[in-house]
Image (cartoon, rainbow, N blue to C red; front, side):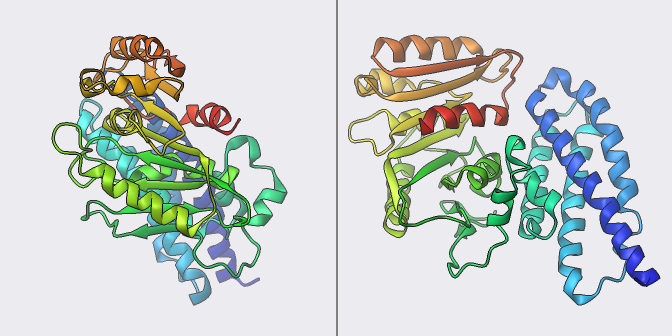
Length: 358
């Protein structure tokens, strides 16, 4: 090995673990994110940010050969977005809007890193549920050659300037002869499917279900006026079920904030195509009760998640939804999570999926 090769290897082995550790640390911050806690979270995140900055120093100056340069570009790009995410917390600990933008930068770090997930084992492990990261058989599935081309992460008219498109993850090792569950994940207000898909991709990649993350046609879902989102969402589901062998008894509609509210509005109605609903940090829309659709909640499987410290929709709204849905005869699981603010509780995904898959 030449001295140049040693420098390149040193740069990669220095940057990769620091990047992954920082991204994991940011996820812990995201789980605790609350306007009243931002200063404490900034203090927690600062050492990871500083270490990643040091690991990035000089990396861009390394002269990678052609067969490695693309990997290096993705690695550095992910680190740049990860530092941007950290900076959104550490430089503005009193700015809630900066914190929200930081979470989107973290999504883009994952987006930049994912295309090279199979190049290094630690990167592939990052995109797997923690309990399965040493599952060598699972890791090997991602490295196998396949004739199927339309697998992995796909996007349809879903760049960040567009509305009404969708992002889709089809497991690389999918067996199209077997019925596969479908999870549909709805972003919050002003969000985007291209970002929100990362809240679920790790679990989809580990457990082998198809994941759809659509983008609302407006800034948020159709909560007030004519429902322009459900017809499009229905066509997207139809497209996927024609393309793949989807288990129609296992179609989960979930969402965060406005997405959680809309998941109930779209899902609690006659002839709903969704077998399960899982609203996170949303509210039971008045139209469901006033319009009479609450009667369609009977026997419907619903997994409701809310935080005691939610600053946008106080926990009392979840208690009221619990009472209404239980009274209507829903098959309800209600998870009120102590200390959770108005943020997506990604750590609840495994328990939710255990409930959904049983």
